[in-house]
Length: 399
Image (cartoon, rainbow, N blue to C red):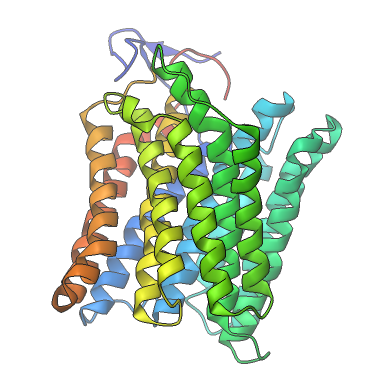
């Protein structure tokens, strides 16, 4: 049983501040904390290198930066979310204590090995993490025959294979474009986001805003999922650019319709909900820009950053905030810290995507300013949520 200090007050909900140490009690705790710290450091170091500052050479190229944001930051957030969500879906335990430490250690080892000349070891360790996570969530899913969630295991294994492909392509061991392999990874992550967005955004909208009825239309849902799968297939196989562009625009139409049915205009006074809708807007923007841009040229980079900074940044920050509050017994209400985080990450996306696009002469400045806003947003999350993630729930429950 956890002790509490009755004299102190929790920062939300009016509960007493708990005493103890709970970092390894549930997956979201260590992985959200590591993800936020890592995103701040990696982006700041990348911006410093981009501007020519003689700091620690963390990554040597845009490909290295992309690798670490996808296989470092994003996989940590996915791990924290799935380890927590699968326990709720199955009512079965997921990794805690030493098994959770081992998973976190594997992720950390992958980040450290990227700084060393041991490329083969780095490849194996980075590829092993999604597989280990697949096993960790696959066991409770199998026990409860949660068939509708089996696909997460398959997607994690696929991501592991793509990590190997990216590494081998970067090292020139096989004749595969690492850019193409990374695009396939983006497609997989996009699919995960649109699946989870479809599950949680309408639910959070209806639960969090009285009188709003966000709609999930069966045909629109099938078109939204199918269009992303179609994009993956076209990126995997040799496909004329015009066909990929048409598929991207059809996907934009499907996801734009999907978002419209969720009534985002009704969420503006509820930050924990509007940040999720705003992130989904960036998915539509990404698909539109992809439809009208050449991914091999600079114009394609704007589309990619609409997805990575706008959609991934906004959706992960929104979910990391909501999950941490909900699973530590706190009220699901955003304070001025959370509102600031959400505005900062949206500002980072706007500047990164449209700054250099509309003002080519300020392209370099847009990268520096966008990276700084991103780092500030996740720095605020780290500082604000450090005690929330480190210490037990305010209501005394386990988790």
